[in-house]
Length: 328
Ligand code: ADP
Ligand code: MG
Image 1 (spheres, rainbow, N blue to C red):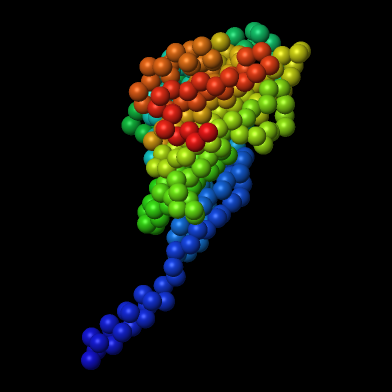
Image 2 (cartoon, rainbow, N blue to C red):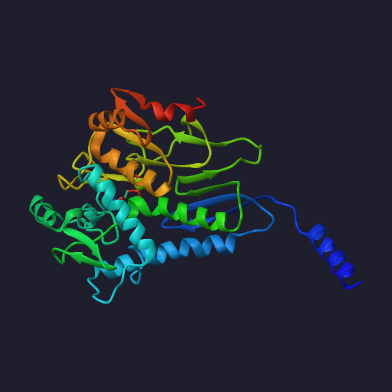
């Protein structure tokens, strides 16, 4: 009798459990927006926010108590947490592969050019040259959970990889909750899994860049159909200012110490994780048109789509691996 009652109660409990629907959560994080869509029986916003907060606590240079800020302050008691360790190791790998085009030790230069967590507007060629001594991924290492700097003026800026990593951490949280269909978008970096509400692969637009305009274009240069992968876009058409007639972009070439200036307008990268896609998207912006096109021709790992200016027109170049994602 008792068993029958238990079975009856179990049956009622399952029939009352909520069916899955698509939920959308949005807000602001890491100085940008986020939009998360997922197919689940219940709203998971609180858990999503907690996941993003853990990334902030580790990697935000805008929070003075984060792991990265304490490393920047040369706090001798700081221990690298697990999130910081993943990002630092990946950043070092991308730096090695790109010959230092991507480099999270670029912080002193980013700040000197008026961006980053400690922006300055007063600089001379001499200050830029001297800051180069404080930049270089080979000058920093993780040993037994501790960051070892070859010179104390080294500082980190994970802005070009942390948004992507944030997407991966939110995706991992959703996976843990058993969610199989989701889109995680943090400031345009995305992880896509399963199907959209129309039961198709997710559709992602690549923005048509507008050279020399602060207005963000609503036009799309391409539409991607994509699932079970991550995508990130870097562009010099959103964050820049003019000085003495020169465009100063927020992407800095750590090798020259100067902002990138070439005709590459945006780079879109598809990779297994948003962290890797994000880092390479910035790396290609630094490498510029010619080197990026050469680099993608030999690349077996990444799908890459480049938009660059030629005269008054915008040209497109992508590798074979990118082709299957293009709807138009
Ligand atoms: P985008 O969408 O253009 O890629 P991100 O925020 O992803 O923008 O990356 C740009 C930010 O990364 C800059 O604002 C700066 O903080 C940092 N950064 C600039 N140059 C480099 C570089 N060469 N390597 C790594 N990080 C960089
Ligand atoms: Mg980036």
